[in-house]
Amino acid sequence: MSAKLDATLPLEYQTEQNRLNIFGFWIFLGAEIVLFATLFAVYGVLGERHAGGPTPQDIFILKDILIETVLLLTSSFTCGLAIYEMRRANLKGLLTWLVITLLLGAGFIYMEVTEFIHYVSEGATMQTSAFLSSFFVLLGTHGLHVSLGIGWAVLIIIQLLQRGLTPVTARKVFIIGLYWHFLDVVWIFIFTFVYLARMVS
Image 1 (cartoon, rainbow, N blue to C red):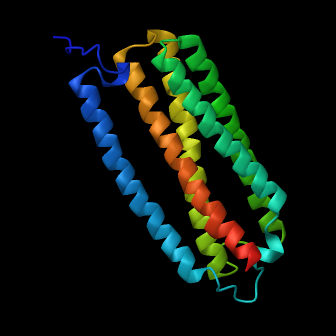
Image 2 (image 1 turned 45 degrees about the vertical axis):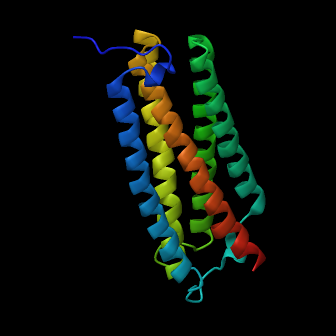
């Protein structure tokens, strides 16, 4: 028996199952907030323990960090445009902006990997100090989440191409949009408290 649709709501909210799934994902994001809050707390405690190794002022390159930030924040904007096109039932526009979002996300990951390689070449590894251990765990966890988000979104794009825009595919797009925006918010905190605060202190 097909789920009853409520045409007065956005496509992703038109079935009770979709509404429950979206609510469940909000709960999942709450758990993710706890995870990142813990990692930020660990970094806050260990961030000054350099053990004679490189400090943030020694290794951070502001230009590269700004490029990463622009890439990820722009991807949040394009993700919003994808949701806007979905609400207009414009599948082509939705797919276009989703692909652009993923390209920006891939650019962010490339820059982050390049950044980590630079740090290691400067002798800044996880084993060097407590500061670097907490830094790599925090940044690596966020980068892993972005990578998983890219893979997840690729699968959703495949489903959109196969099935078109339906309440089920719309719900999946909306949820990956929530996930993507969440990762951008986490990055704002990383940029502010990990990079900016350490470089000006």
